[in-house]
Image (cartoon, rainbow, N blue to C red; front, side):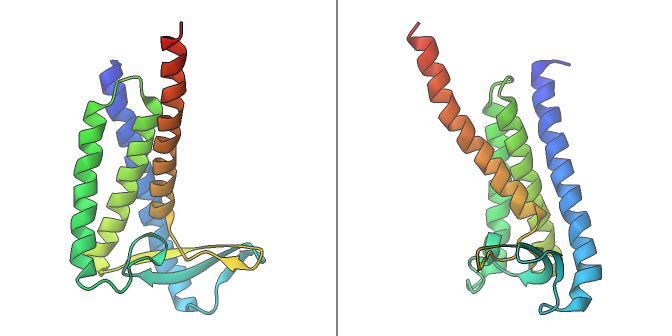
Length: 170
């Protein structure tokens, strides 16, 4: 496989993997958790991790829920993000494996939440983490994929200067 082809395969695999996992878990959440209601979560690890059904018209971690015209704006933003992801992918070097994986996760996460927004007008969230009395807003696999993808890109940005500095100092 050529390095250029490998870049697109990696991107596609992580996009599809994160998208399928996201949509599958959201179907399960709607089928199993929605009937339980928002006040009857499925406790996975007491005081640390629950599964609780929530519908979010905003963005990740329930931000911008009350934004006027939010559905249309957030749908357009997701489409623009996908175009930017693909454009960035095309410009990345063939050996930038971490970036290709990161872009696949970002793409899959964006598509996963875009599907919900278009089909239901809101995103299905169901994962709730807790620590030391603090509870994070409910999120989903798409949100996690987006965060991990962005985190990998940030990591890559910090790793590049060191690698470039090492080669220029020789």
